[in-house]
Length: 402
Image (cartoon, rainbow, N blue to C red; front, side, top):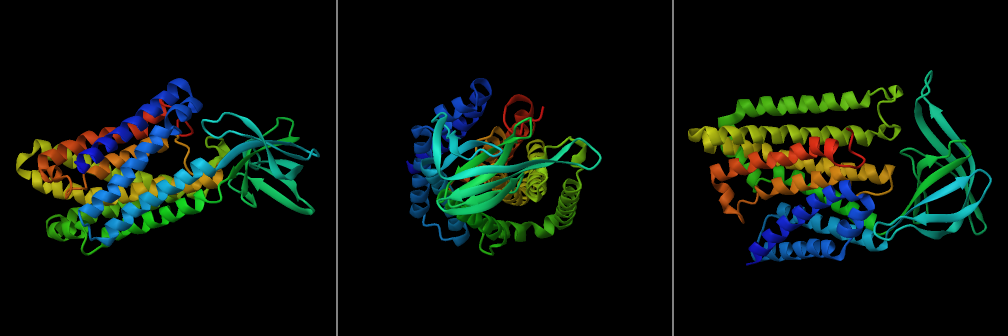
């Protein structure tokens, strides 16, 4: 009974996220946050899914520490997200040179715009726009301001990918006035949610790697059984993926931003790692899709194709998990929020959750059947297509480039 309820809730949350991303395109970001992402029922579904998931793991008497660590990381991440939702503050502050201000406008999702006061004062001293040498393309822009907190004064500076922290408040360079005499800073205050969420990210990174190398884990057992059979192929594939990863890192780290084809905010080491790791996961998932097609069409090789596909699936989920949450850390450093339900973020999470289903062969034994497995991973590839192409061309958000 519990397993059926879990399955229903799991599908329900996937459908809700997919629907919300489409609604955001049709009605706007504020509407989607107010009527989907920030609603009590959306939070309740996540809470129920989490609570029942924990109960189910206990009921099944799962002993693998790596499995416990992975699921605990999700619980911690969701707990951090809930703390951020109820306690975090976000807003925008407009400063003009020589005009002290303690007023900012909050824009917490679902609450609308409200005027609020800081417990200290900011006074913009200087604003600079930095161009690439010999061009009129913006490389960076920065604001220098004075912070007055009671009788204490401090000089501060923010720029793209460089934040300033005062107490529980963090300031980010967001925009500026056309006359160069004013600056717009993004404000975020989340002293409890971010540390909890980051602890969840750390545990997630550790547990994902742990599952790959756990001697008692399913992946190591699968690898040991299949190594002799697929040794040459696996060595070639993983070598090519590794070389491709190094090439992507090199390529992104040498992008010429002076051409103006990329936003200055992308000039960050997080960008290189985030995109490269995500692309690795896509490549591995494409391989599972190819194995699925071959497994469906090549009846006599279905079991072999299933074993090979699963060898690609585990590291694909690992790299996708890495990529998603490295992106979240980058977003927190650059934009002041680690998760904003942007369409690409949402569909990456949907894809991760869809593919994660098929590794639960103990609780979902139907996926031990080669044909069922191959059909599922073949259809699951549609979520990759939606994440990579659909978001760019049909949906809205920071990751929509078409």
